[in-house]
Image 1 (tube, rainbow, N blue to C red):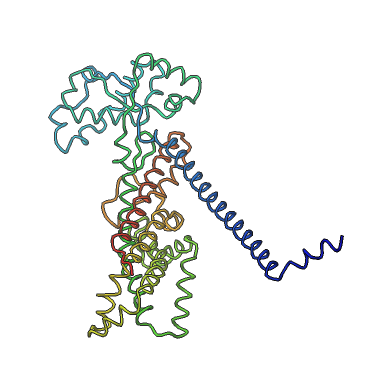
Image 2 (cartoon, rainbow, N blue to C red; image 1 turned 30 degrees about the horizontal axis):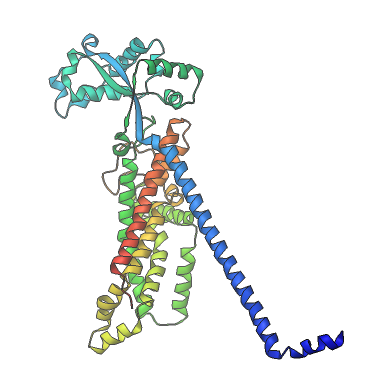
Length: 425
């Protein structure tokens, strides 16, 4: 047996052993690469699944927040004999003329006459404002009997959606037989401010407050952040002081946002005595928070510009400042804008620092300026989610959808600007 196997063993040269070992290593390397690709694909699929789940849940819960269920309410203005004339309802004094003339009592009495003794439970607390607005739009209704679409109550809306108590479910069934319900797109949700009644709340006040706050944030953080990055990259000497500044900027970018809220509370409210819950204070606080992010992104974008650009500009006689502002900054602009918009998107979704400076007040009218009391979309969502009434659940999800659309629009703008100004070397 030894004589038959020894020739085969003798035939195995060192080259054969090396070749087999190399093939085993190649097979292991290919197997590791296949595993890596599998795990990478699985991570992408899992992330996309979570994102799709989030969007489906938000849309399914919030789509109803953009609509309003109304019921037709017969109102006899002629029998009510309101102490107001048609001429008083024309012009800017209509609201004053309709104040304290019994519109609320007329609405409650009309509901009980139309829907029974519990008719006032059918209508929302602010249903009388729909009657008042209908009278303002058409003063000739004073001598007529008309059917006005008014919002239903939160309890009845819950029963209309398939939940609620048996009492309200029976009421919904009875009204459906009369074809009294009507669902329409709620334009008031996009044009009104906060309210205590979920049927009359709107996000325009929060959207306007977010716009003013982001405007202040951009006006302060962008120029200061970009100029700081230019100085650190192009002019600052390399010593331990600049190293300390760089470390401090990197650390500030990782500081929790609530710390900046405490800073804004101590500096802008307690020391400078700026108005509480104003978009000006919110913008200043958020500018401090995103400024390190803008500085870091701008420095990386400036650093990515090839040194040959600077050398060529200096070679043709350009000054140092001309090199920076005529050549380096335009080429670094895509990265700067991308980092700025990403920082602004982070600021748009922040809640904690704004809560610390008092931007959680009940704002019933949209702000008219930077110093007026205001709130922002994330804070408005937080306040609505804390409400007891179930009517705010759909409104909260609808506001989240609006906030997500804002964030998607800002990120799409960042992608567009990067592609628009990007220069390939």
